Image 1 (tube, rainbow, N blue to C red):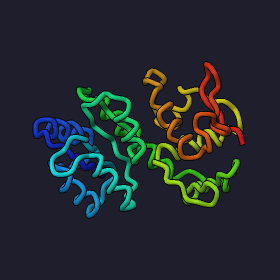
Image 2 (tube, helix red, strand yellow):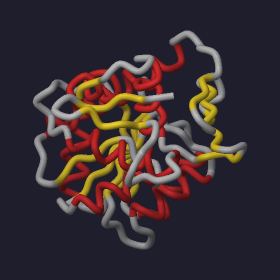
Image 3 (cartoon, rainbow, N blue to C red):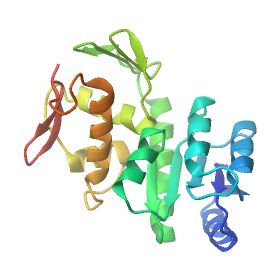
Image 4 (cartoon, rainbow, N blue to C red):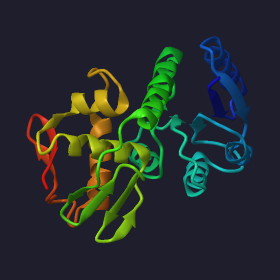
Amino acid sequence: MTQILLIEDNEDLAFGLKTALENEGFAVAIAADGSSGLERATHEAVDLVILDLMLPRMDGYRVLRSLRAAGIDAPVLVLTAKGEEADKVQAFSIGGDDYVTKPFGVLELIARVRALLRRTRGQAASPIPAVERFGEIEVNPASRTVYRGGRLVALAPREFELLLALLRRRGAAASRAELLREVWEYQSGVVSRTVDIHIAELRRKLESNPAAPRHIRTVWKVGYRLER
């Protein structure tokens, strides 16, 4: 059975989410603060983490950083009452895979949980391509590592999947809707700013001049493409 860890200090919300997820066939454990959530995530088998950002004892940002620093790559769905873009960018940049802004619908959250789990399990079953190179960047899909000029670059899981999606197109343009379906498994009705935020992070980490990118290019009125 799929194991979900819900790190949420609001008892009513935690109970409601736990009930809804268990009705969908998931096993759910609850941690009421950041410290206990981090302890459980690092010592128990967890398939997915649902993480509130505003937590007592240790906030969600610190929990997320600690999880990724410990090598835990389970997908993390961030719950936040904040709607500011900067908060979403920060959550993505330190290893978050997706976010839901409070208030949210339970059906939407369950759909996102399923999409994250499908994507994660699909990675394990997919064939392993050869090492890809462009400019001073080397991408190894087998080890899920990226090097820039011989130095390891830390990419969040979604950033890595987005980079692979662009590489697979061999220079062809990809629309935001296509990338949302391929990387996030969402329908095109989902706000496409999610793609733009991740592209900005990829440029910051991989381009010599993110403001004038050489490789990750914008295709006007279409989306993005990768030039080697």
